[in-house]
Length: 416
Image (tube, rainbow, N blue to C red):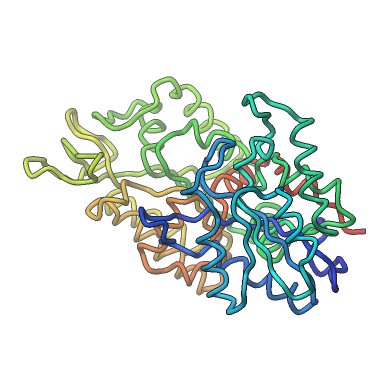
């Protein structure tokens, strides 16, 4: 068990907080979704109550170790100030410049400073100015960041799967460290769902590729009672069983692996559910996410997809079959949509399952949704407020489900 914020003394101290402010900006550099900023407010408000001086560190985009003005955190400092109704200090240009260090050194209790984009420095991602891997350079950068504060709080779950200067490296150079409220919540829901699930434990996995979820499936086969597979992944599994999948997206080089996973599920007595019918189309405009006027959309009578057609969503029989399992589940972990949900006509399967997960949650189940597309799907279904926990870190939640160690969490000290 890792130390959490309330385990450490932050009263009147200078506290470095790693936050995830990698938010979307439009062409006018206006924030189009501030959910990640809002998610950090509980930790910031607690530190303010404790009279701490707060130094926030974050990244935005992929500037590749160079200063890119469009990726400055200035707009985030303004939005955070609006949300908190407090001034948020900001120094442009460089997070470890003399000006930034002076701003940190003179920061008083109850004040907030946001440092410039960490990724303007290649050392943040463990590289040197030449773009080569350089742990010495990364450690030196982590030490410089740490020198601006006394204790460190990790509240950026979206970055903890990265072994970067501001996630794992910084911890060894501060007096104490802990998980912030956001990370604590992520670990509680994801950890308890996997390690202490209330039975029946159901996992719903979607998305395009089996190869993206191999490790997740293998890890979950040791924990779950039922797995539902949707999305294009399902066609690879169906084809591995000799089912015709038409022109559907299939990873032909993963057919043997899909077959092995199905056998493993059987051996471990895990119910492995695949679609039993599909919504299919003969042509689709994936680039513009549109259905061409001359295309033909049909619903299959069973799992077989005829030649010339591709699967784009699960059909009504599949939804009915899956619904019985979802309704009886007490722990549900969902990662990935069940169809091309970005196109409204092919979103029904994903939306219906989202509604069922919400209903199960209201009836006492614990539900955890992770991954950008899954989060977008529950929002599209209008049930995001009815889910137990929506993970803020797509990549991190996926690696957690794989059973991997997350460097940004591993680096934090354990409770005594």
